[in-house]
Length: 325
Image (tube, rainbow, N blue to C red):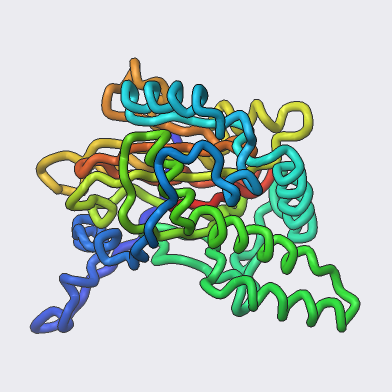
């Protein structure tokens, strides 16, 4: 029952502009190129698979998930379902630090709780950059080399006597992205949990701002080979009602996987505009992973699966932050 405003136009010329077909939005949504064009870094030789304790992992990961028995249980669950969600993944002290930093940044930026922010909120030159195009996606990405940029930003704001919350957030997420998610030890750990042996990795730290950000399902997401998706999410769910809002999916921010139609006619991409059923028993080809604080999602994405992050609406308690590989 909701109205949608559409804006369209026509080219009036004897011939279409050069490259017009390649630049058409629908054609871009149907082209399978984006993820296969991503830069994947080869992994150095990982530690011995028989090692039970990884020193690097122990600096980050809740010890519950480093126990041999727990890893075997997770592996069994993953092989049965093709996905698993691990709550409380980081060490409690790191999770608390993340919650404090990220909630504080949302407060500084004045986003969430029904506020419609400016499109450039959260943009920091050399540290956070917007990602588009908007007919496919919109969110903020922590740039490569974010550690150096964050250090420079911290010094600048310190010299100017300003709040350095953005620099602290960038430094924390850069460490998490590069030291943990980009490491051979973490790749070997994921192999223990899933039975999938990663050979290369591409990492990213993202922010989905309330009232602004999303990604859409489109054929550029499809890949030639199955991919193991790892996503560690952070949301503000610390007060009454906030966790319920995220769990319901009503404010968006959840990750969703849907099966692409064989016809490649763009119809399935359009489905990303509406919320899919979150119960796999209700819809066989849909998997939704709701945004949660300090939760690691592992999904084996098949070649015909498209993924997206549902638009985070303005009433959301805050941003969805994540680190993915």
